[in-house]
Amino acid sequence: MLELVLTNKEGLVGDVKLKGSLGCSDHEMVEFKILRAARRAHSKLTTLDFRRADFGLFRDLLARIPWEKALEGRGAQDSWLIFKGHLLQAQERCIPTKRKSSKNTKRPPWMNKELLGKVKQKKVAYRGWKQGQVAWEEYRETVRAARDQVRKAKALTEINLARDVKDNKKSFYRYVSEKRRTRENVGPLRNETGDLVTQDMEKAEVLNDFFASVFTGKCLSHTAWVTEGKGRDWENAEPPTVGEDQV
Image 1 (tube, helix red, strand yellow):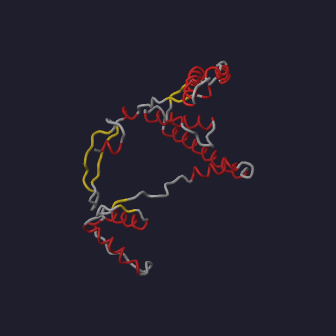
Image 2 (cartoon, one colour):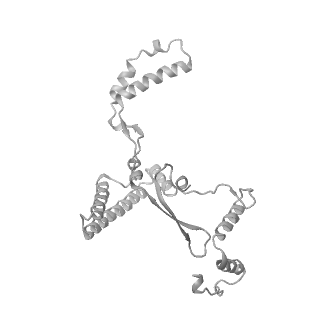
Image 3 (cartoon, helix red, strand yellow):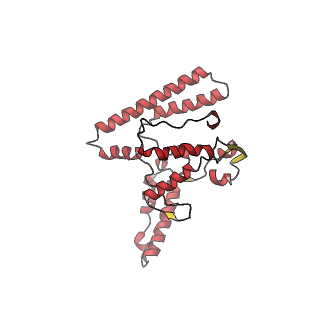
């Protein structure tokens, strides 16, 4: 059941153990291990590598086809299938493919070639320190140097975007929108009776009841104090005393 929650593939999680409750919570702690051999599996998805494509040959191959004769008397669907077949054949000859990996995703605007080398150098130093081949002081200096350069590159990129906002508004607002990518809405929830809740106030009450139910026994006294104290002066109010057995 834990593998279904944490992973999308069997064999990634093992050695699962229950460690009991944390304090007076009715939720139990779970200890598990993520298997490194299974975690390092690379993706086998491929994508087109347009940087190494030969677009000149691509245009020549499509120009050699007598389109008027090939599409004569054909309907819209048949014409599209014929065009698609020739297009895919030319694409297979002129545009190579490469393996798609999560490490080769879109880089941030402040990441240049020199800074990318510093980040890779930091990773190499980390592996060397873990294997005992690099001293701690050397690894720490490498991390600090890479961190300082990343901060300077981010600051310089933001300064340039703010300076050129009048001439290049698209880049500025794209950078701002990427920083503001958050989930602003919570989906519908079900309350204790099983009814579907869609209003914001009702969803807030359901979540409040759920998190309040985590604490049981003596911890409910603290929750009750918070509820009763809403009408009092919070600056002068004092929480109830908590004994060592309740901490």
